[in-house]
Amino acid sequence: MIKIQQVGYTYETSEYKSIAIEMIDLHVEKGDFVAVIGHNGSGKSTLAKLINGILLPTEGNVFVAGMNTKDDKLIWEIRKTAGMVFQNPDNQIVATVVEEDVAFGPENLGLPQFMIRERVDSALAQVGMSEHMKKPPYLLSGGQKQRVAIAGILAMKPDCIVLDEPTAMLDPVGRKEVMETIEKLNRDENITVIHITHFMEEAIKAKRVVVIEEGKVIIDGTPNEVFKEVAKLQDMGLDVPQVTLMAYHLRNSGINIKEDILTVEEMVEEICQLL
Image 1 (cartoon, rainbow, N blue to C red):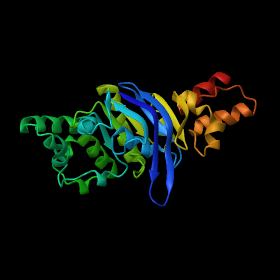
Image 2: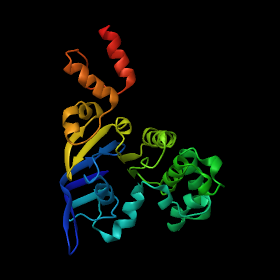
Image 3: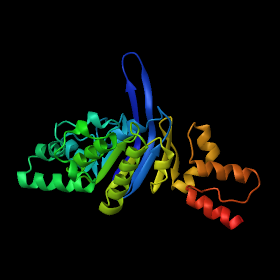
Image 4: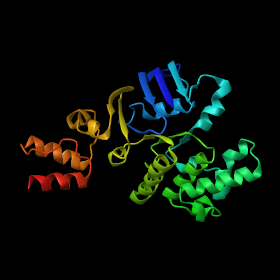
């Protein structure tokens, strides 16, 4: 689905030059769910914009379903294939009624009215927002707005969704709503998900976690493989799930406990076995 080959990106003006991405190789398969983590300024958002063709690589190539983002003729097809959801839903919602906002993308594709209606209804149902279709977006909660933004992308029938810290501005209830929606789309619709986040409890829900530091991929593996590297992640200024940190300290205290525990349930099971 996504091939990033020896990609570099440099922000450059007449006054300064800053390398944001440095020689990254990254492949994402169809139906995968990849979480990308890293501290602020590590290059996460730049990577997201490279995948969607908002930015073009200074070096190397980005392919989306075999299409090179550098090919101007393919850019709209690329953005239909890999939809982008941003941090602030207010920046992505363009209409005054929910259903009209979701219809915006299909209308711009020139689809017939009956097909637009089908796509709007389907997309809102997929994110659990059908009952709100006639409402103005300003009456919705933050989590509901973000689900509408996701529905707007789904109405374009993408094979992949890139989410750039979509829960950063939400409260815990809103984050839970959005994460349940993302997981459902990946599980039930086989939509490829690339989820950029700084919440570790969200990253552990992915099938694969990629850690970026100073524009480079430092760790790439399953959540269990990545988060057991507690010391390495902390050296990079990153958090780890609380139960994983607890397991780390228990092991350092001489207690024989697994090092790749991610959830409370796993911790309870491990402690019960010790007892």
